Length: 596
Image 1 (cartoon, rainbow, N blue to C red):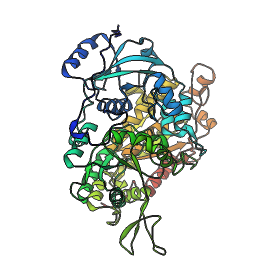
Image 2 (cartoon, rainbow, N blue to C red):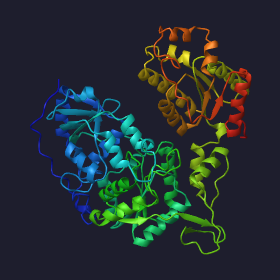
Image 3 (cartoon, one colour):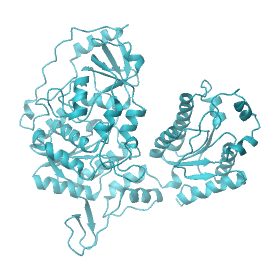
């Protein structure tokens, strides 16, 4: 049962901020604030007893927060169908306002079937707290393939299906979109860095108090080092403006350094700027890594926060390259598209120039301004990670000591990190035998707790209610991945030995574990005929007789991994030899051995 609402109250007048009137106008002319007054919030809570509810995903929570706070001005809710289609096709809302990225609420078919235009849906966080009411105006099933191709595609030849936003759209997003106006009861609660989580109105007020009229925004999802300080200082001097360091602390690219570490690094860096010329505020954005379109989106968001300029670099907000090494976007696509719409937006772009260090002059230069004959050096993100993993100091010319110290706190060398060894292969391939041998070897070495997550053990204790359909198998592997990630995050060794026949869910587990420690995928590639010969339980015979349905290798496929770190055929090897080979690989990668 739900309460239909056809008599929606008119939108409240947008809140005025006279103190900030001299700053750049928000996108669309006025700053949206969807958080209602206390009396209206009580009315909505009371009425919500008769409404259906939707528990928001992490991405949807980020979107809702920026809708309510005005970061997504002029949007007043999740997009309806007409706005959505205009944005997908032409980057325009139905009233013609430039807007590059769909902001939609995806829900299940089961929920959509019980909704109708005029209904109101209670939007809740993971703990069941009601954050907002969505007054439903549109319900439709989008063409997500078309959305993926139009919004995130490019002509570089990259494999579109590997784009992280496309993988979400086509593999994880719910099939139905619900659009409508939002009335917010409260912003999503945060318990970290609360003084830095400023709304657009609060950032504008801070600008006014500091006497800033022009501000350059620096978008980042990575730690900042000396090169970043140099380029931001140059950018602010070039346009005679102050600096807003505005890192994303919502959802970024899988594998990025966690925002807790990054924010501590930004706090350590902030005192290196001249007094009252730079400030730090956190942005709870769920990035789509949409390259050119995302650059326009970022400019609009910073305009709503009162910034007049945005630093935009090579491949701004792009996801990098596909598995074949082809970039998803051209290096200057984002700059070119933003430049095209710069006048309409009213916010200016400051092109990001790669900064390189010249030891001979002890200074940084833009890469295209290095004096002839002068040698330069740089440390890539990959090299930074390697140094941290190996316990090698980051040089002072590369980063400030305080920043380096924060990175070392969160990135201990590999021999002090947790690691997951994930064995996959057919039933009877020898996974459990190898896993048991490995566990004994690690216990013998000592130094870290070791946990074995064998397929049969997990089925008995974590997944006893599951069957063997693809959906249930994926759930089982996700559970194993979650437990392994927690073990790894806390410095332990997790040895996993399920069949794990499907490539996509194995990749999900890798993406879950790698941000918190090591992940080694071992393909136990024992041939099917050898596995059948070893079959002590008679499972293969039952499968071939049709007694056991959906049996991997017989009536259900096994997708061989193409990204395995180690491939083992146990036909002619002993468990001791197989386990020793894995241990040697871990030693080579630095997860075993090393000094204090």
